[in-house]
Image (tube, rainbow, N blue to C red; front, side):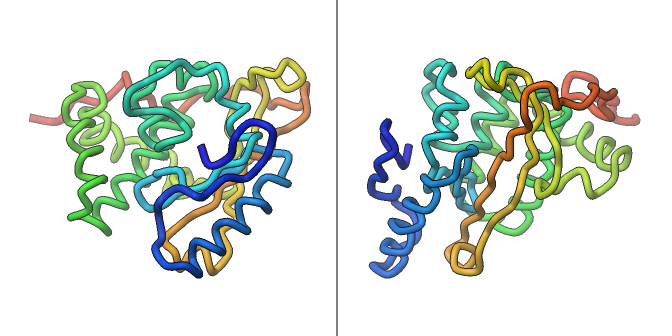
Length: 216
């Protein structure tokens, strides 16, 4: 994690090269720590470059995993960590499928990227995930529309380990400034809604475990 307990910023993870870029990220880490909501900076592989203490607190009850910790790679956490659904509400339809869709777009754009290819290989090794990626994802996008793929502005359920928040909703806000974008990074902030403000659950339009069989 890019910050240690106690809110003191540490060195950014290896990412964009260059002294000026590293200096910018170091200052940006201080800014990130001042945000009360979970906020994270990701590269194009969803590797975590920076994250604040509020982000770490959201996932503090998550158990260890060799390759899918939320402070290492957020996409791998969403797709592969067995505890992801304990924090991310309506995990499959509201978190997995949108991120799978964004991953598919990233693979098209950065097709030869080794890190993305490793994730693609791991998806292929999971029969349910592979079926969702190849067959369920196109069906889901047709059902809910292209706008469901976007993170910015979407309202998604989650369960915070702090009982002051508990089961609530968050609005995902893309706060990427031009300099971060030039470094190939994206900043996402999860704006938590007060306890009791959660919207009624709605029927999901797609589900990883309900994948239409491909036509013969």
